[in-house]
Image (tube, rainbow, N blue to C red; front, side, top):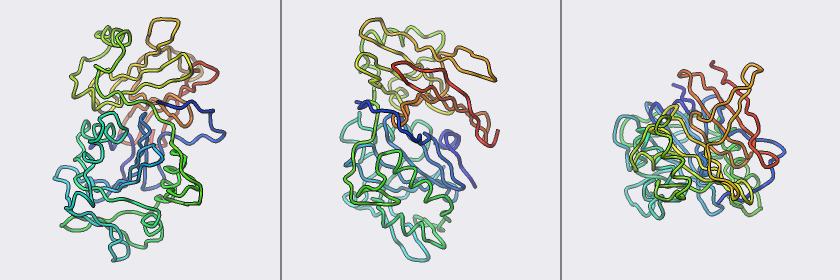
Length: 339
């Protein structure tokens, strides 16, 4: 069973301005049996199928954020006592002791505006069983999984196989996305360098946090956007991004979170009233204007605006609009291999 993002997630489940990286690292990544994605908030996860569920490793963008592993069963209660076994030996386990194995909700509960809190709400919004017990995941666990012949994960029932094919590539991707390569907290290839914060947008947990002029533009879009309640809003990847000294980008939901949920991009500047962003896109050599796009995410590492639109279980259309020279540039479409 192979799951890809964002299809699998939908089916189950203050930026510091930096220069664009010389080598771009994609917002979505798949290598054989492992996949990964990041939210605008800078929280990222990598995951693979584990029976009918997912085995996931996730981490927030702050330098002090630890990586955690969790078992996400689909369609049943998440176990609070589970273990990862490598070649018959348990190398990672979660227990009922909250102090040792907090739930994802507990990790995120300190502040609703933190990236991990936004990540927890996003998972709940697409129906993925909440992580009942998360275990800290370190470079030692990653090395054990990388070298494993057989890996399994389970929580009381029959253990489910966990593929190791593609894990190393995704662990490297996760570290690269979050500026951890060669640092003391890297998962794949740790070094001696202290970690630094990864680029991230500011989480908008509730519509009441919006500036009045931005809220007015968003509320005026009823003909284009489905109105949603506060709970649904909190489950979207709503965020604001300080693009430069005078321009802020707001990414706000235009429908309930889920597969292909449209997002409104609003630009607010100090010299003009906020307005929906113009997002021209090159499609088959021609330029088309499209201000609403599916599942818009801010890619803080590459300074791109990215839309992901699932065409089928194996086909995802991705559009990337780079932010360069003080403006959002013309976007270009690309397709996944399954299209």
